[in-house]
Structure formats: C-alpha cells, structure tokens
Image (tube, rainbow, N blue to C red; front, side, top):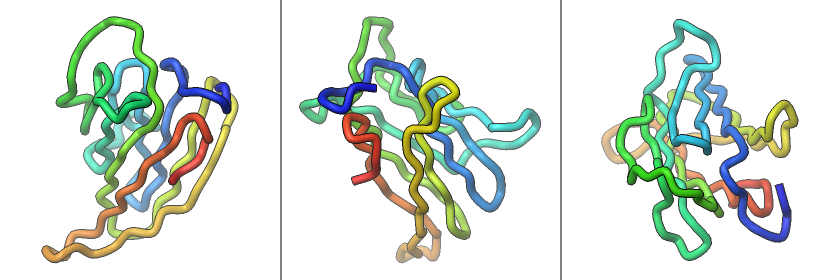
Length: 128
C-alpha cells in the first residue's frame, strides 16, 4: 500500500468483536466470517474514492448492497459501521501483512443500539 495515494483493491478489513469476527474484502466488497460457521451481520462498509464518491461493489452484511461494477477501482477510504454490544478491534491487512490496528469503542444510540462509526483512510493506513 502506497502511503502517498489510495489503495487499489488490495486488502481486507478485519473486525474482531464480542460475538465473533468479520472480514470486509476490498476486492469485491463482500463481508464474510473469519471462521467457517460464524454468522455475519454486524459490519457494514462503503468504499469511497478520493473525491468521496462510492466505489464499485461497496458491500454490507454478506456483501449485500453496493454499486456493482467490474472496472478497476481505486479506494481511498472505507466508511464503516459496526453493531456490537462491546468493544471491537479493527485491523487492516494486505495479504498476510497487518498494516494497522485500532480499538473501537461503541456508543449507545437513541434506540439503545451499540454502534461504532469509523472511517479508515487507506492512504494513511489508519482510522480518521
């Protein structure tokens, strides 16, 4: 990953939370469990380009939703929401190399749901 520019479809966002672990793939915008048999449904991300536009297959739970397309896409940031009842950890991986990790602290919204909203700046390899 080039620290001077956005990332071209290489990487995985990993969210470890109290109920399990989910992976968001930059390649296709899909969300999958870290371990077979685990459920997904707490991680929702939208990939954006350098001008803030939605990019390609921005996914939701299980890869649902998104803007489709097979053209080469450059992703500058991931805007994510995690529904969790406790702390979570976000880490960004390129292949087998962990590039960054940060702890996420959820806040309770007006309905009592615990969520964490965060943006991961892929050029800087860290959350904003």
